[in-house]
Image (cartoon, rainbow, N blue to C red; front, side, top):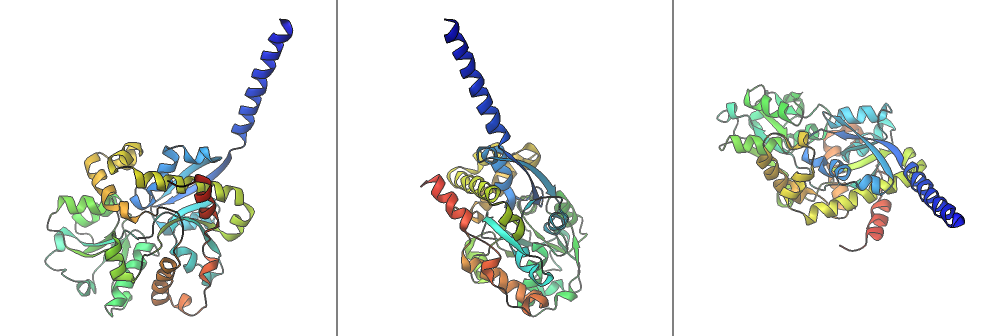
Length: 341
């Protein structure tokens, strides 16, 4: 009996030790979110809420930033390991000899909406009317800034003739629009849906939240929200990169198979905000943006390169091999690991 007792105790201790070891195996990682509150980064936050990072061995600390450019600065400075940001920065940094690579795609539609301020509806009727006026973007040098410049160039307008100011992507962007501090702004959800709900006659100059509209603007789907990091970091942290891809791909599948109401119910209250119905409407508007596989479509990457060549002389002047700016290795393995839906 005594031997049996000790056998049970040893068994319990062995289980506890194994459990503790498993817990210790989780790798702590700092994940930046380049635009707190933007639905474009919803999968990065939702993966934490659903426990998918932990499930795949990552203890992820999420660190929010007001814009993509702010998040990128933080990553270059070593504040975060990986950034949930727009893929285009991997291209934009090439002329600066900074080599970033996307680990997994979250969305292949940009979700940008160029909206006229309610106070300037009569004065601003077209993109051409923006010349000489101040337009809001999430931050200078961000994806929203380059989207605006791309639209201006398509109309034959020198972007230098349209000054920009950073207004963020959340309540700050809405407030700047309603107060008329800018004549228009490139917005993202939930801010865009909030403004469009409150002001029924709002003038929209460009909307890239659906495949139809994005293809009309860019000629293809457009690689957008992603998880990216320095190529050197990825090479040294393949296990962590794979774990991140596993978590995001599993989350993307969850998003695809659940309603906007169910998604909103899982998100942190500070992301949903005081008007849950509005947030649900915004999520519903943006669901078409999200990838179902986490894989990069070559044409979606090429559309981003085309935008940068038109907007950034340094990019236009150099040959860029897109294969060095992203990898499908981790998303493909994640798909195989998770099996069919």
